[in-house]
Amino acid sequence: MATDKHRVLKICVILISFLLLFAVLFTRPIITQDQNFHLFADTRMFMGIPNTIDVLTNIFFALAGIVGMKQVLAVRSLPTRWSWLWFFLSVLLVAPGSAYYHWHPDDQSLVWDRLPMSMGFMALYVILLAEYVDHRFQRALLPALLTGAASILVWVMTTDLRFYFWIQFSSFLTIPLILMLFRSRYDHRHGFLLCLIFYGLAKWSELKDQEIFMATGQVFSGHSLKHILAALGLFCLCWMVKVRQELVPLRGESRT
Image 1 (tube, one colour):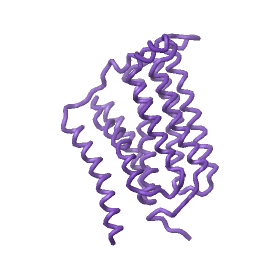
Image 2 (cartoon, rainbow, N blue to C red):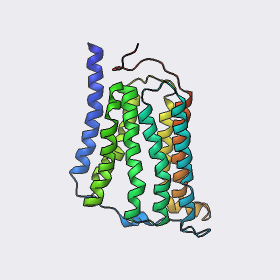
Image 3 (cartoon, one colour):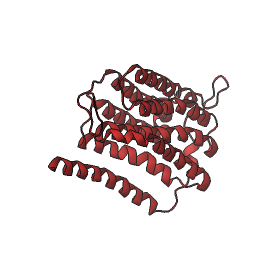
Image 4 (cartoon, helix red, strand yellow):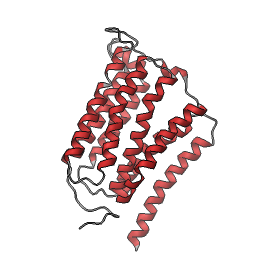
């Protein structure tokens, strides 16, 4: 009984975190896309490709998506297989979406960059909930994917980014809480932590786009580095899916 109470309390902590971020975002004025966001440091053109390095470094997302899907399909007994497949498919789709955006950066092309990302965020969150909290959360995959897509649709129709930011940041802010509060059914859980570390470094390099470009003698920009760092985080998940072993059945899953 005490264990059940503790578990409910932990779930409440996650839920409250979601609601607090929602309150923070939706009690402030509408957030529109800053047009300076489209001004990247490295605008060099090679082989007729505008913003060449920012465009080409998206190949690493494609590789991570392909490798990840291959690893998932190779694991015969994986209850969260569909969630993982959708996650790595979203990663794969980020590659052409982001390349298209960097070819001609504006709000319209940014839609195709953010759409697969938002779906990837939600698929990963379903994975965490299903593998750490309750196996039955994977039933929420389709509603979660639709919610991610809806956040982009809301932005397109209203110019308001608050829903998208809530989807993006609430998942990554609560992922560390899930890792700390709940036990995984698998070992090598540090794969998620490595992914978060690389994601944090990627966001930092994105913010330091110009500074990194100048520090490298205008050879490599912070945004291009962001693509590589984010992909490295994704390869950590590919590796984790490949090598981890099941420890205990997760609550909510029946076993025969």
